[in-house]
Image (cartoon, rainbow, N blue to C red; front, side, top):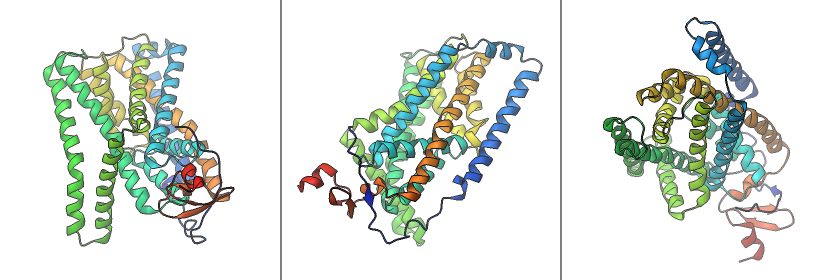
Amino acid sequence: MSEHPSFTVEYLDPPGAIDAEPLPEEFSARSLRRSLLILGGIVAVITVLILTLPGLDSLRERFSGADPAWLAFAVALELGSCASYVVVFRGVFCDRMSWRTSTEIGLSELAANSLLSVGGAGGLALGAWILRRGGLPRDYIAQRTVAFFLLTSLTNVGFLLIGGIGLATGILHGEHNWLLGILPAVGAVIVIALALAARRLAGALQRRSMRAKLSAASGAVGDGVDEALRLLKTGDLRIILGASGYMLFDVAMLGVCFAAFGNDVPPAGVLLVAYIIGQLGSLIPIPGGIGGVDGGLIGTLVLYGVDPADAAVAVIAYRGLLLTVPAVLGIPALAVLRKRLATEAHDIAACAPGESVEVLGRGSVQRGVPLTTAADGT
């Protein structure tokens, strides 16, 4: 995982071919400001309600007793989650771009996920534009984006299977309800089976579709599934540990938010299952998934025996950090990256397969070939 020496790439693409693609409107400065204002307004309303509504005295007391050291630890865990996202992004898309570029793209995607609620697709869409703007072909981006989404999703589903089995058997303790453990496990198995069957379904749609766009999309899905399976077979620890860390650091942060307010931390199995089920609320089209994810998390935790007030306090604190930390890191990263894309040749182009780029100080380098190999002429 050592970083390659820094280098500058000159595009060989026709001038203006990539510059002609503007930033999608949903990621413009105006749209991001609007999302920030909406998100801030929702947070302000929730804060006012907590501070003023009668009957919430216990909740207010719990918030006032927060332990700063535990909250600082929670922030550190979220930073670990962000770093893991960058690692898995780099492992899936390209390890020939610099760590600086990988970090800026990864953090930009996380910021988009914080401000837009489209099940994580917002960040991937922004990343696709950045990679295209940096010189990569659409087919490559589509294939790797599908693979990235599938790998990170299957990681969540895999841990849902582990958590469900752990609860059903009592290994991970929690609510002693066999049904509440086996149902998530069965659901996880079904999702895994559907994901593995997606290749065949996509191939059938591609063959039968009369519409070019649907056929192309089906082909990208099929190629993405193949690429995800290929990457899994390589056993690349960056991908395995990155995808796992991206989720597990978040789960750990949720647990720490219980401890931050002096409450008992739920069993690991309960945290795993509640976290993954709660993320389904991000599909609700509200910035940051506020309300959907929170309600899903709190409801699942209560279902598994967690005190409602304890769950509410921990989830509100957890969600506040989950939205704030990536946005604080990612919005400046996106601004810097956009400026670099507009004013300099970019090392993203070194990741494109099958074409040559001029690397200053090294001459012509075949895209998709490691720099050390290309330089040696082997």
